[in-house]
Image (cartoon, rainbow, N blue to C red; front, side, top):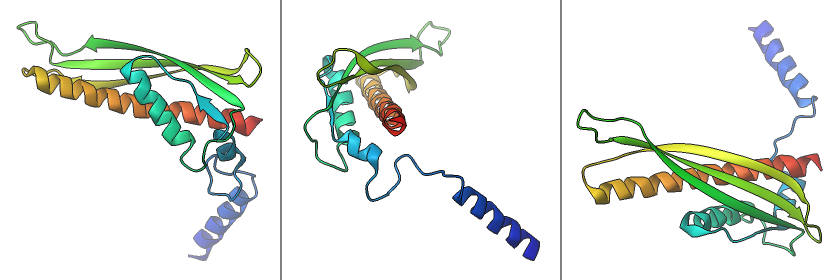
Length: 164
């Protein structure tokens, strides 16, 4: 028992001294979260673009109100559907929705991006005999894709700000 206890204490001591700290840690003055307040999210085309912009605004400015913008986040979206499962009658029963976001973080007073990246997510949904049910399933898939993309973009921005 004492050997296991010693190993656990030693492991905790080693990891505590390694300098590891969470990216979004609940520290009082987290510089990464503070930088999020200076990001202006530019409008994105189409309905799915509006949803992504709202998701980004929610995630970036949830902990602090938006300040005067130091950065501008410009994004474009591409959306594609691929049918997967096909019955003998040649009707598809399952589809993948792929949403790709290209985004650029541009510093104020400069047209050159300080960060350019692409994030891609794929979600599945059922194609049903009812058009309404299929449309509802597709809308739900879009919502899941937008949440996933929003999280991925915010993490990419957090890593960028953490390295500054």
